[in-house]
Image 1 (cartoon, one colour):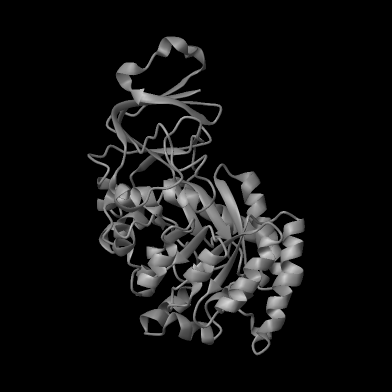
Image 2: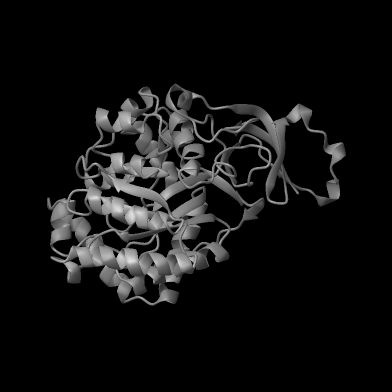
Length: 419
């Protein structure tokens, strides 16, 4: 049993947890000042004002006590869109970007996703696991307690399954909650240029059945955008995945108004992600749906692209989630605290909105809102304790300062080894 006492502010508490928070309600953040939090068997069992803590009802000898004086307690970040299982790095392409080449131009030259696919093909599973485990520990130390990881750098049956097996091994090796997404439709591999239909058939008739049979993925994703997969191809792949129990998620409208948002809603996608190119038609399509708009400001920042219209979405009444898009080509960082800062600075989201977007709303985008995303009785005790800070708003304000002091996952204090 774990007792955190003298908490300066316990952030985002809920007596009756909701699935997500939308529209004007995103600016509301329920908190308790001078609070306690009690954890047992990996779950949150109680919280409240310090004056209401009845320690007599608990066996004192079985309690680990943490004094959080001058510190705040937050629910762990939920990062609902990453590609953190990858091999090597792509900093040379970063130089190409500085020189003025676009994302699409780099991809046409064999860079981008195809470059990562080549690196991954030449990396064995154990080495890929070792590289990825370092990234998992990194994001955990930054305050992330749940993460979705996509395949998509394999682009062959063998290599896609290799990626998904690494994700499955990470699930067993780490304290983070990890969801797995099959993204074979990330790009058309070099050998299928000019015969893309054959690659789509490979995804549908070979990859999906084998992945489903081995229970290697929770979701299926498609990069539905200009120069990648069309709306028709996307629908075909998502329908095939649904037959095997894989719920849809979509990369949509990063490079153009692709129709990806509309087909995502039509196919019952749990989330549509990126959304830099989003207008009134797309917003109206999302209203009333169960699809979570998920914004990835790290990618827009790194690529120098326009940012998605977060304010317009929220003012229309939509919920918004935020994720890191941690990947080697367009967002090589899994620091969700920095995503908070980008959301406030570039998307003009209020700190309260950004906190809701990186916790309860992004938990929903992974089918985890029943167990993660806020402080509520019965939920998984994935939380972090800050260093002494004056306000909640200080987290996005102090955008490069390391403010996560103690990480608690499944009710256990996690110790990180400095590499």
